Length: 266
Image (cartoon, rainbow, N blue to C red):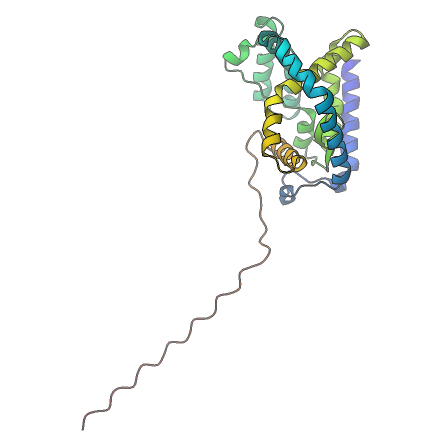
C-alpha cells in the first residue's frame, strides 16, 4: 500500500508542475540566469514570518539542544535521520538513471545499517562511500521539468514550484513515516526540524553578518545550490546574449598621394 501511495503522490506532483508549464524555465534555457520571482511580495511576507518564528522559537530551541545534548548523541541522531533519507536518495538516483551512484548509495545504506548499528554510526563515510543526497524535486528536473517561480514556504523556507511538488513526495519517505503512532510521528518530525536547525546555526550567523538584503541573499543562494545539485556539481555554462553589436570601425583613410618630386635645379 505504501509504494502505491508514494506513486500516486508522485504523479500528482508531476501534474502540479505541468499546470505551471508556462511559468517554468527549462534548466538548459539561457533564461535560467534570470531569477523567476513573480510572487516576491507574498514571498517576503512568508519570509518575514519564518524569520520571526525562528527568532522566537526555532533558534532558541536549536541552541538549547546543541548546548544540553552531548555531541555524541546529536551525531547519532543526525546519522540515523540521514541514513533513512539515504534510502530515498538511492531511489531517486535510480529514477534519474544514475545507476552507478545509486548502487554506491545503496551500498552506503547497507553498510551503515548492518555495521553502523542501524545507522547510528557512519562507517560508510570512512570507507569512502560519501553521501550524495537527491530528492524528488531533482528527479523532476532530470525529467525536464523547469523550476517554476521561486516560492517561500511557511516553516520549510526557500523552494520553487517544482521543489514544492517534490517535497510532497519526499515527505512520504521521511523518517516520521516509520513511526507507529501519530504522536510518535509528530515527535520524529519535531526532532528532524530541531536537528536541521541546529546544523544551520553557524550558517545563519554568517548570513546575518554578510547579507545586505537577507531575502535576496537566501533566494539567490538557494537557486544556485539547486542548479548545482541538478547537474551534480557541473552545470552547463550560461549562454549570454549580446544585446548590441559594437559599432563598426571607421574605414581606414585612403593612402596619401606621394609627394611631388622636387623641381630640378636650374
